[in-house]
Image (spheres, rainbow, N blue to C red):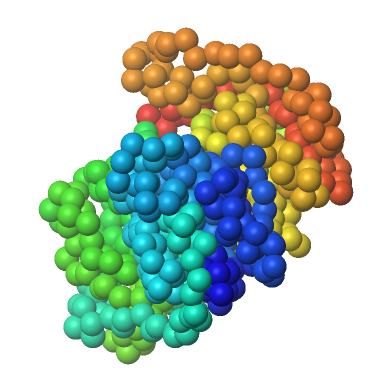
Length: 554
C-alpha cells in the first residue's frame, strides 16, 4: 500500500476521530489518504488556531488532540499553540509536512529543520526517514504524548516518504499501568499529616487528570483539610463544598495566601511550578513549613519548594494509598481537623464573589459579568479563558463544580487561545455549552476562526470584553510604576457588524440586565454567536489596592 495510507491506518488504530489543520503541497498525499478515512479533517484558517483546538481537545478528553500543517511557515505557525499545550500538559500530536529527503541537505524552497525547532516545545519530535518506520513512529508519538505528564509530540512526514510503497500494519496498542507509590513515603506522609496543626492542600493541574480529583476530595473530607486550587486545578474540589478554599494565583497575593502563610504543612497534589511559582505562596516560615509533594514526577528543584516527602507515582493511586494509610492510623480521630476553622476564609472570598452581583453600571464590572456567567453556565458546561486582565478575574471569581470545566492558558500564558480552543472543546463535548471569554486584543489574534465555526455550524459562544487597551499589561505597569503605564490603547471594529459579516449572530451588551438573556439567546443559535461587553477595568487597581492591604486573622 501507499505509505500515506498506512500512516492514516495508524492514526485510526490510535482512535483519532478528527484532525485540526491547514494542509499544504508537501502533505497532499496524506490529505488524499484521509479522504478515504473515518477521520474528520477540520479545515482551520490558521495553524496556530488548529494547535489551540487540538490543545483543548486533548485536555478535555485525555486522548491526544491532533493538528496538522505543512512545512516552513505552516510549521512555524504551529509553534505557539504547541508550546502552550506542552506547558499546560495537554496531550497533542502534531503532524507536519516536509520536502523530499533528497533536497533537505541543501538550500531549497521552504526548507528548514522543523524537528530541531520543535524539540524545545515538545516531549518528542521525529522525522520519518523510511516508510518502514511509520508504524513505530506513530505509536511512539501517541504513547509519549498521552503518558503522564502529557504533552506534545511531533511527527514530520517528508513528501517522498509519503509516496513510497509499503507492506505493513499498525502496531498493537497495549494498556500501560502507571507506577504505584512507595509504601514508606506514604507512611511518612500520613505521619506528617497527623502531626500537623494547620495543614492545607494545594491542588494543581495534575489533580484534575486521571481520576485524581475523586481521591483528592476524599482526602480533604476525610481529614478536614481545606483545598486551594491553582488556575488549572479548578473543580478538583467542588466550589460549593466547605473544603474548597478557591483559587490561588494572583501575582499580588490574595486572602488564601494568608492560609499558606499560617500553614505548617502544605500537601501539594499534581502541582507544576509553572502554574504559580512557590515563592508567591511559600512566603513565611519557610524553614518550619513542611511540604509533601505528590505527583507523577519528582519535584522540581527550587529554593522555595523543598519537600520533606516526595510521593512519585500515579497521582490517583498515591492519594488512594494515602487515604487508606490515614484511615488505618487515625480511624478514631477522623476528621483530624475542623474544616469550620476555614469558614472565615471561605466567607470572605464568597462575599468578594457576590459583592457586585447587583451592580448596574456600564461599562460593566468584571465581577458582575462573571457572577451572571456563573449563574448561567451549568456545572458540566465549559468556559475557556483567553489571556489578559479578564483571565485574572476569571481565575479568581469563576469557580467550578467539576474538573475540566474551566480551561485557562496558564503555563505559557498565550493570547489567542480561547476562541479556537472552544472549537476543539465543542467537538470533544458537543452536548455541553462552550463559552470562550477573551479580551478585545486576544480575540482579534485568531478572529479568522469564526469562519471555521460558522462553516461547521458549531454553537460556540465567544464573549469579548472590550476596553480598547492591553488591559493586563496596563494593570501590571500601574502596579510596578506608581500608576504610570505606556501607550497601550487601540481601536476595535464594530463587533456586531463583524459577527454579521461572518454570517453569524452578534450582540453588544448595553445594560447589565441583558447579560443572562443574551447568553440564553446566543446558545439557542444554530451556529456560533458573539457577545461584546464593555468592561470597566478601573476595578483592576481597586482590587490590587484591596489585596495589597490584606491582613485578616484566619
